[in-house]
Length: 194
Ligand code: GDP
Image (cartoon, rainbow, N blue to C red; front, side, top):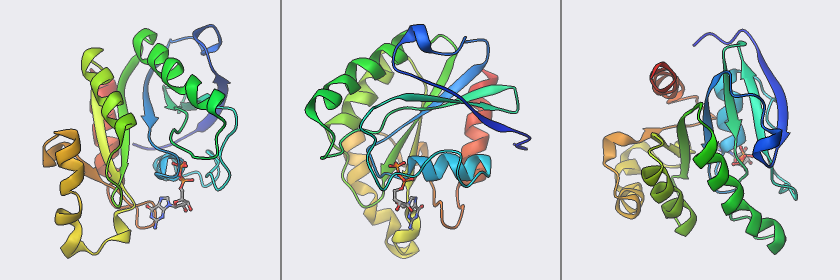
């Protein structure tokens, strides 16, 4: 994928505020701090397009980005951040579920897993929704540079077990080394072509 342009379009919380669904799109979801902003920035070669989150967003938004004037990337709100107020936490499920249910131009969801963490209830719930709503899933394991190569396969066993997904469903990614970037683009391209 050659990135000619990558521009923030708008934020939204509800369908009335989504940009028109003229373009196909793929969305990104994951626990806060999983490396979602870093992944999107590496994919589009823009260091600061998506803010990386040392501070948690108090307001949780869906952020739409226009790529090459051809398709959208959608950054879904991160979840599981301890410091987010309960009222904001409670909005996450309905907001994401509404998006997944109603967004007809959505072609796939990239679901991110930190290589050092065991998936929690939110990841499993998302996987259930994606299956129910027949949204193709592209699972990514992030921050793989944090684990030596020889230990990686053992390290990801709990992720395979918790998700029930086969090993070859996952792409391993590092924002530091950019390992996995080309493979992720291939999978996004394939999803957008469908
Ligand atoms: P987000 O909350 O999911 O958007 O996560 P961020 O992209 O803001 O990343 C959270 C923290 O993890 C930041 O300190 C990043 O620098 C760090 N990080 C993200 N991706 C990687 C990675 O692939 N390797 C390493 N070593 N650190 C990463």
